[in-house]
Image (cartoon, helix red, strand yellow):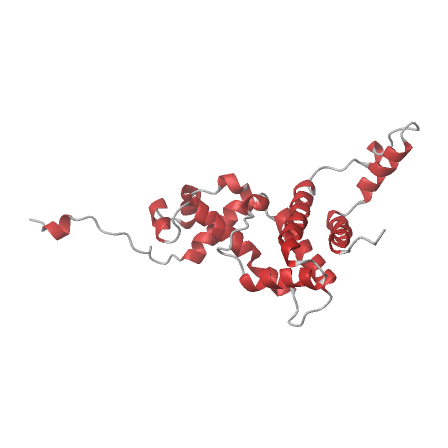
Length: 213
């Protein structure tokens, strides 16, 4: 006859040979291949060959799993900056261009962006904000400027995959010469180069004080 202790439900421990890094890696593969809506405990556990319940040892729920995926993707951004500070405009452009590149590579990554401090690389965030301060952005405006630059980055990444007109479609006719020129320019654009140029223009507008009237 089993004792009371034998009949008590056993607490689940870590699955043999499984780690949080493997769970996040499997979720990242699912995310990259099929988008954010495809990420589920069932799909991730299928990739790992374990019961879905085993994942709860490593992440509390889907929100935590997606947050971990986001943190994993952006963890390497700090490596963009050299040990010694350089030109803040160049470094900021390089940083946000890298963010743009990640958001183009990982579909739906923009949907995971969150301003919460949890999971943030604090040293990286401080360095980005320090560069804005070095450019003359007042402390009270750093959040607004950062969010404006992030909005530009996210929006540009989302539209980077929009189909541009082919050369045959670029001629809007003699009655629309400016439109024809714009369409031809669209056909020539490299999305990343265009983003870097647009970012530089917006950054200048945000950090350069207006001349006295």
